[in-house]
Image 1 (cartoon, rainbow, N blue to C red):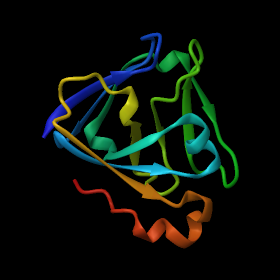
Image 2: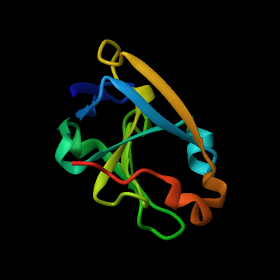
Image 3: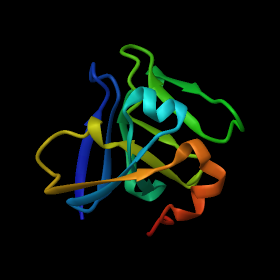
Image 4: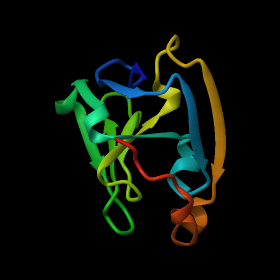
Length: 127
């Protein structure tokens, strides 16, 4: 396990997430992920720490309102959020991680357009 650091484009929001150095992430084709180019690295809440910028976060919800999408109010980047599939964790956008701690990156595809039919295929969070 390594500590990955990341944040938004302007640097107002900074966080760290503890995960493997060899990452397996999902690229989703749902409406919001497709438009933002989001690649999901899901970690338990115990492995995520917001370092700065809480006051700059704006929350966006849609559809069921369960997922909490956090955007930097300065630059507009969504570097992490609480997903509907894992409300007890965070999904970090791997594209928002700083270089240097990722040794290998494997990107899988998730059919989020048909979310309800496919959510069972997502790996549960491991502590």
